[in-house]
Length: 346
Ligand code: SF4
Ligand code: SF4
Ligand code: SF4
Image 1 (cartoon, rainbow, N blue to C red):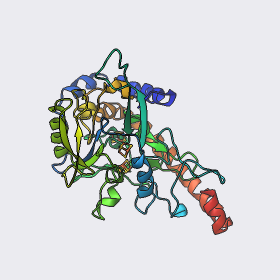
Image 2: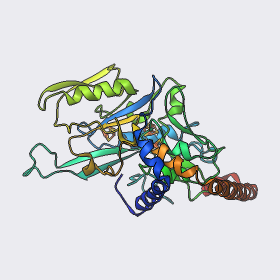
Image 3: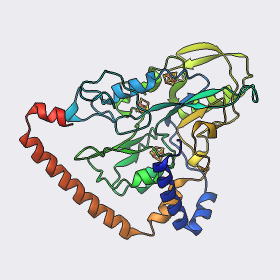
Image 4: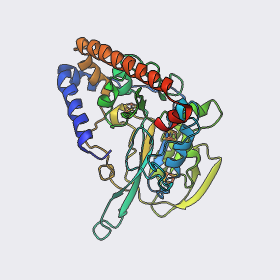
């Protein structure tokens, strides 16, 4: 969520989309807010409870390297996609940003000066992954429906067999979430799918299941919103029985309430998201882009895209050709490789 050069380029592209939207921009903003499914699922992350242990990151990788997970590849089945080590380095994985191997990242920010703002902690963690927007820009611009919003849970899933690699979703996402497998011959878009593959096994998001403090909890978005509002109504210094892992409160932990900024990030931003945040410091100090407004981004991006059908046609042709060529190259390469070579190459 910090703005780097790539984010700037994305934002610039986004600004181009908005400029192209013209008159529709104003009318889009005035429309009713998008509705989410009754049983939409999501996550509440409370930065005041996060100790930065990164258990969420580690278990996100493990859970998503399993079949059906967002990081699973048939050719590397059984391997967890660590960023490091490479070629026999020590086994320690410390990614610093989202990537094609990292769906979830914990970042630490310098937050306040205790001498000036006694209520503000000196630093704060924040957990970054797909926010599962209620009305997602990435879905709205995908020409082949590789990204889809599930009608019952609202989870944004990705189907690599449909994707032809135009990466329009990367440009459209206001949060800079989707990543691309640049190093692969047949690349996919990579992002958190809220551990959708675990739901069928009666499980839920690994980042919440393995969070020891209750900083990340899973559940129905309506319940998470109620929980977030309850916390904002608490007084600093009170004690509260925080649910751990799941908002249904099967497990709880009693803690002293820290200072909260009076805002639930994700209630309205980008039209509302199924991933919600609470924090003890202003969100713009945690890398959240202050230019992201409450506007529903697909209404803006689609206004632009609908004016340039030729662009979509060109993207479809270019993307499909690229995908076919790279897949053929990969097939030919695999034919020439022993099974050991194949594992090494991927
Ligand atoms: S955060 Fe980005 S990638 Fe995730 S649903 Fe929203 S637009 Fe799509
Ligand atoms: S919901 Fe699953 S995929 Fe998404 S960040 Fe958490 S563990 Fe990773
Ligand atoms: S597992 Fe929980 S406490 Fe640990 S870093 Fe992740 S969100 Fe924070």
